[in-house]
Image: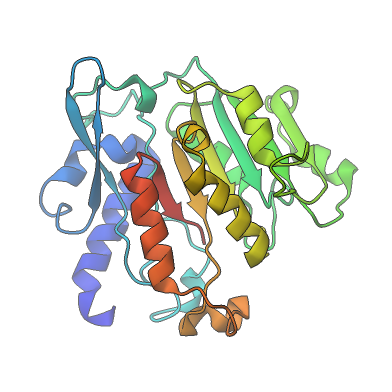
Length: 279
């Protein structure tokens, strides 16, 4: 990646502006100098047949920050490279949009299903809960229904103390392992199906550091078109056998590889899910 520093710098600048302001529908990301860096997902209005493109980070490298590991280990958990899909209605550079799925409006709730939630302000790989709430707030979305699962026994009192007051009435945190059995009442996908409609904006994050269990959850998304149709955006740390990350993941004996991550991401993006890696 070192010989691509000019592209990395464009990526960083474009993504940072997006996450602070406009999201993936920022029209600046569709033209030079950013169009040579970012990938695009096209959406179609099923009523009018109108099509719109939205920018998203490319599927390259280790599917995390482009500086991670090979240039600097301090970027391994950095999320400033991500481009979320939600539209910020106050963005002055917003491309013309008529796709309500990507523009639910600040008066509607965003649903988050976080597998591997840890605490609100801390976690093994850095906080996910606070990052999601702060990022959505930056985009004008302050109404969130949060569902979290954490297998590691934690202090319920400490968990609750860290949750902001405005989120508490809309916060569910289960200190149990997420169960991949489709028939289980502890399978998060059953919570998702029971609580959201296809017109809701749904974000899923999967990072439980258990490769076989994660694979079962992903298989259910891939094989269940009704489930995948409910998910608008997903973040997944796919623990595979790739040399630069083996010292972090201890995945030297895994039989899934980085190419499998690429295939998974491409397939689900083609279904309309804004699929991201998760650092």
